[in-house]
Length: 573
Image (cartoon, rainbow, N blue to C red; front, top):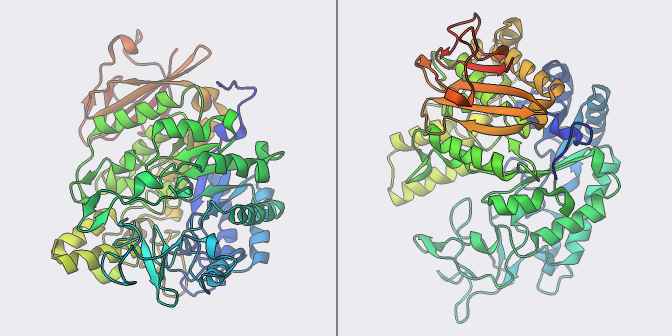
């Protein structure tokens, strides 16, 4: 279906801001961000024009994976505050016209969740089938190498199976061994999850970002995967977009969202999703989720050795990926637009120039993203042009994925510490998790104590106070981009057409709606570039492209020549 200006959902005009709570603002000096800290900074988000705040997990958790291992879905972890603090945050957001999106992590729980503790109590437990328990392979003793029920490789290295010594059986964990996977085949599990979700909606939450939601359905035969790393195999074909996942999400919609979906936002994180599957997830007539996160564009710079072996981005690859998703979800479905999140390094360091052209490239990349068709997501600090941390020692890193990569590489002798440090400096998730840089004080205004993760040293130059004082800053450019989506229907709903698909320096496209047309031209390089769009967008009598709606650089410049990292949004006269 194609929406019109009159019937389009509210979230087609919205911008979402992701908060990673432990790194946003600390209110009590313990070095960990918290809910009261978030409340104290809401005026910053209001000034930016944000519509929705997505809160990474704040549930009670042992923090093995920074909160994505949940031990109680209906309580707040003491490190972040209390349920009363969360109620106050919800009210404060609603007073400012913003909505709250909670992170829903229901592919797995913590191994300290009461459900799993009961399940682990023995094979006769009434909750044994709430998780994936299996005996060793036939003829093999528990704990014997190769006795794991399948050869699947975990996202966090090693086997996806952990032996329970007491019962002699293994439980499945696609991620950390402290994150056992829930068995969605069991209807009791699904009903318990739905009841929890309704509880949060009744409390005032406005929707959910659903963590790895396309992994919840597994092939119940649990077959081996092709070997890809030593003895370990790729099990992803047997759990990615699994056999019953659409059935489960449609049931979730009926049980949880029916009758109130129009005011909510539901976003599925879907690693490995194909465009065909994304169409199923986001087709409004199927009633599953409003939009999905896909990961193709954030894998384009992964080298032969994976994410920690990065290679330079080819702009034509980015155009091919973005263009395919824009075209594929043009008539039905919807895109989520993002560069950064808690799992990705900072885009200005990754695809931009965080040195001489930090401000210009941050603004150019933001323009490129926000003018696509879809709902943009701003990750905390992105609006300030925050950069990668570039830690100089391996012991400065805290992220579980990074630390396990280092341990595995050292054990196998596949990389030197110098190579490991280079890989983490470019791609570690900790690059996105350094504290938000509010001012130029010793801990960047984040805490009065010792931060859980070191503050980026460049906070003395890159910080919110400096950004808000500079009318040409990254912050104010984001504010103008967000305002454009709110007020200009062609930005929210217009058709997308890629231009110059083979150009390795210039990213150009048009957005058109009901006779209105915008041209977006971005120089993705540190060199000046003359641009000829030919018949796709001819120049006018003055030699220019039209009326400037928004640009990254002060001053007019040459009509069809872009300065280094310059972006222009132009309306056809």
